Image (cartoon, rainbow, N blue to C red; front, side):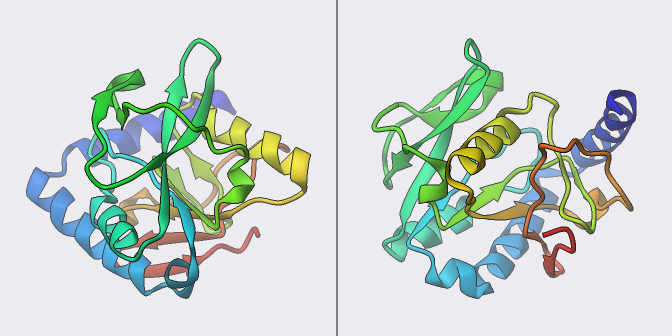
Length: 197
């Protein structure tokens, strides 16, 4: 399974890296416009987002829209020593620093969101996705462990939404029993409800 994941990951990361910055900016803006039309986003009071790297879909317009709508926004902070990720509040203008893996993170590391299920929505970065909502990340398992831990504790999860380019879609992804599928994937072409949820 890991060899197959690595092959898919390497191929799609190369495809993503071929995008120009203008293409990333234009496609990301279109993805964020689609996301803002989703009733789940409009009705949410608390959302988790990420800060992009490696030519990922950039959710910055979505972050700004959420803040302007007075939604509570939370961003991830990675703890490499503990192999974990947690979310902290973010407000417009809060300072950011380069953290683990070269990804920007809030400088302020507290207060930590007690449970990921306290969020209405969690937007996820990804390398690949399939129609069932299975997501392929970078292989560290940070999000997977967080989601599995809090779902075990509460029996719930936030609505999980992946942000992607259309070429990141694959027919099927290998996944483990503890993996949790996304509910939606949003590309510049529209919002896709996942069949695995």
